[in-house]
Length: 157
Image (cartoon, rainbow, N blue to C red):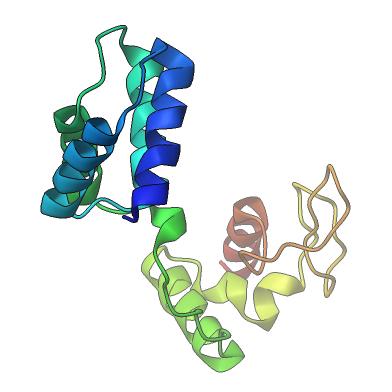
C-alpha cells in the first residue's frame, strides 16, 4: 500500500475512533501493511468489519487477522468462475429420460403407447403432451405425469 493509502485507511479508522494520525502512525501501519501484504480495499473492509463488530481500539494486527481469515476461506460459489455448461443434446436427454423411465417401470409410458391414453392428472388427450394444471404449460422435466404412465400400463395389460 502507498503512504497515501495508509493515510486514507487511518482516516477511515479515525472516523470511528477519533484517533489522531501522525507521521509515526503512517510509518508503523505501512510496515504492518507491507509485512502482511494488505491491499487498500481489503484493509478498508477490515476496518469497517472491525468496528461493526467491536468497540476495541483498532490495531494493525486486527487488519492482518481479518485478511488472513478471509484469504483462507473458500470463495463463495457466486464468485467462482465456472465454465458455462454446454447446451443439452436432445438425443442424450431423451436417452437419459428413457433409461430412467425404464428403471422406474415406465418404459411403455414414455413411448407412443403412453401418450395415446388420456392423462388422469392434467386431462391431456391421447397424443397431446401433459401440462402443468396450474399454468397450462407443457411439462419440461418428464414426458408425462406418473398417473398417465400408470394408466398406460393398465391399458397395455
